[in-house]
Length: 318
Image 1 (cartoon, rainbow, N blue to C red):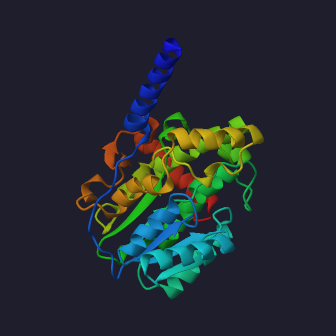
Image 2 (tube, rainbow, N blue to C red; image 1 turned 90 degrees about the vertical axis):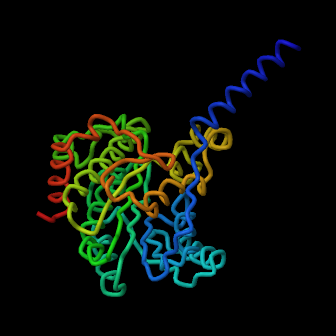
């Protein structure tokens, strides 16, 4: 019995050490207010997007929830308005798996909203299948849809005195790569649709987020717009809603033990969006509310430039 108790005690100590040194994230603390400013948060009806939108609303911002699911988004609008006391929280339909939907969203926004101060590209999926335009679902939603959205809104962002673009990436970008030959032949960064292929596609898409942020910063130099990307931590969200049955059975147990809740997961997003003095670090990558290094591929300016050019072509911008 004493041996068993010792083993259990050891396991508990290891768990606590892991939780507080690896999994538990930092908290962003700031009294900054956003009255008169407008923010867009994609995928903000659930996951870390919802507490991100809530925090911005509590600070007085006009917040646009850019989401695909109307029912869930309208429920989130109700919740956020009620908790924040801010009536300027709105839903606008956006399906990042459709480039037409992205264009429609941008057109409606630009006609109805006179300013844009924060664009938070938060939405993400881990799912097999294809987008409306035939791209791999993960690549199309996580990178290409946000790429097009940002470019369509860039002029409005430039009109603000100081504005920011925040791209939610992930630590898994370190396992990613970009195969342009596959993009040309398969309109995707992987060949198959298995669970392993889907996970690899996710890693590749997160590297695309890092590279997009890097090249965007280069192109925005000298303007009033800065941009940042981040790893939010390991979060218990609906990101894995398309997992297989075994993964879905294991996921709740793992999430309770090790994963951050969505509010904790939103902290680095808020840091990148609101922390004062970050302008010299435009294009950089953050985690736990602190500057972090990216993979070697994530620092490759030639790769970032080529991804931009290919993405422009795939979106029909060149």
